[in-house]
Length: 343
Image (cartoon, rainbow, N blue to C red; front, top):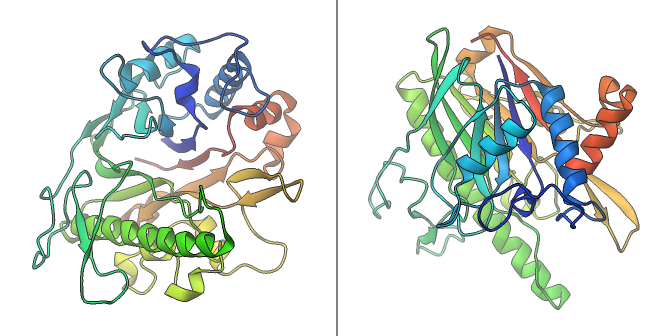
């Protein structure tokens, strides 16, 4: 089975207010890319991946006039994709949803959130992801209330073979200090955002621990807006959110595995994977980043998992296939990550 995660940059801009596909020459949210060009590129990428399930980060908006599921299923029908069934969880207020597009002949996926609405001060259980998590981020003795602007998608998944597992789709807090006017404000906001991103990963890790405690195989995937050594503020907190998710300080059976994250943790000069590519106007240069991951629990490691980043320059097959290479560059500022595993 092939499972993928793909952050499709502002996929919402490819649909009208009533959920119709906009396959025209109007501008998409991709720089100097029309909606028709981005749609066509996405069709090429999804067809080439040929995945059984794709976790779509930045899926189109869910509101009173349209549904995320309906828009994704219309997209799948347009390009004749096997992944023709969609499921999402709690809607966000950001016009960016988290959803799974999957092949119903290969698996079934049901939104199955866990936990109470909000954690009490003395609670040991982990709250539902559309609720509030209380944690003392700055060690002042007063727990802060943490929420997700994009609640993670919790799925109960059953493969056609009958194998059952849990899947959690993630779009964690961005650490970028948007909308600031001074260097001091940028530093303050960057540190605040990192605290919130770490708190969200602690919250997520708590849910993973609950599943592992009852023997559930777990796959956690998506855009964490984070990676080992990604910014200078990591030193203030001792670790990244991704390291928290992997549980590297825990017994082996309680850890998650993600080879690209582990490679970054132990990287040498010149050896660093990337799943995204951003243009820095002030530097007039592209900046590569490792942000997208597929993490698996220890029991799934016995099932011969094989990871791949569909990078247009770093993956030899993508690079040697001009149509796919150009489609990956036009479709999004992130590139898909896939996991092939026997389920």
